[in-house]
Amino acid sequence: MVLVPRDFLELANQLYDDKHYRTEPGWRTVISRAYYASFLASMKKMQEMGASFQEADRIHRDVIEKLKDKNPQAANHLDTLREKRVESDYHLRANIRWGDCMNWLKLAERILIEVAELK
Amino acid sequence: MPGMSAILRDVAALYPEATADEISNALICFVQSAVADAVRHFKLPPPKTPVEIAMERFRLRRFRSFNREFFEEQKVSHEKLITELFDLQSLLDGHAESTPSIPEGLGWIPGTSSDSITHFVDGYPSPTKSPAELRQFDLNTEPLVLSRQKTLPYSPWSSELLKAPDLRYQEDFVYRLSDPVYERVASTLEVSLREFAEKVGFEWKFSMSEQSDLELPTWKRFVLQISISAKDFDERLRLWDELDKAVRKRISELAEEYPDERAKIFEFEKLLFLRLEMT
Image 1 (cartoon, rainbow over the protein chains, first blue to last red):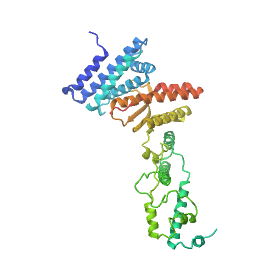
Image 2 (image 1 turned 45 degrees about the horizontal axis):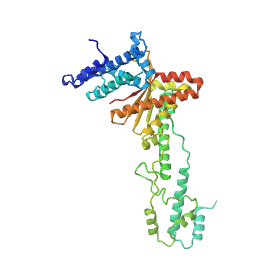
Image 3 (image 1 turned 135 degrees about the vertical axis):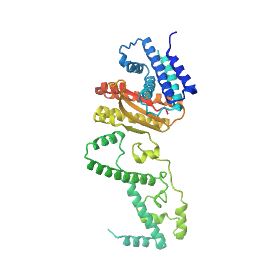
Image 4 (image 1 turned 90 degrees about the vertical axis):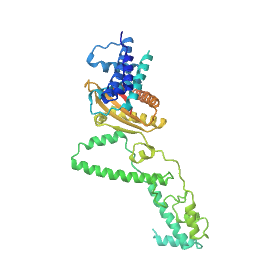
């Protein structure tokens, strides 16, 4: 079975709802999976629209910039979610709260919709 | 120029039926009106824009610490004076008070702005009324209170009145402002943000910075961090998107207006991201 980007968002939602993961590492993982769902969906859509992403080390930048050419607002959303993902992954002193995760999940959901609607 | 005693005698001669209290009340009215007029006509310096404030902060960093402290003290005391004068002018112009302590008497007998004592004597309901009745007249007169004055949003003395959008430039962006193109873009951005915030309402805070990416340090972005007081998530997202459209439209218009700077303006726009605080 081939994974689709939305699978990561569903996992993020499950983690969010699962009381066994109501810990900070769990919430950080929720945000990270939500970002990757959005990022992968954006990359896939850009590729379908003719873009190619050669350089692995700058692929996140290239996807966000390509998305910006198509829909600057969606690019803002993805960039904001990415910034939170970076904070969640690297900044262990950052205050990541369960109560905020719902907004990040909603934002990821919004990006998936925006990307799907791109023509 | 005649002295005050001579003027008083002249006024008393013009109104022989007026009592000493009435004449003295008229004199008080005159003095207060004259002082109020003088304050009203003070030309206050225009409020500083966020760009100017940021540039000033930037310049201050070059001063020696002693000079810097001296300059900062002077600045604080100057701004305090301006704030007080602005509040006083606003009050004298009939606007609602911003603090509970109005200087008593200022702005009484609304509509009177004459610079002559005789006018105040004329203005009494009747010269035959007693001083107590005259005082009652003053107390019962409804003050003229207009809606809050709309003023420029930058100054410390007006931001409290209007809850104007708060825009700050972070240190990592300030040095860009020494470039006239960026300075122009920043000014345009300010206008755009202010107009949008005033149009849609809510409380807004903006912070402009230049950021490197942790995973890709060569990737520089101009980040406009946004905070909105709206509670509903969908509403906040909608405003975020609308603001982004408004800002980019304004930047495009600026590029049209300054064709020689077009490339640089678009470079800024390309690197500009608006981020919303999600908490």
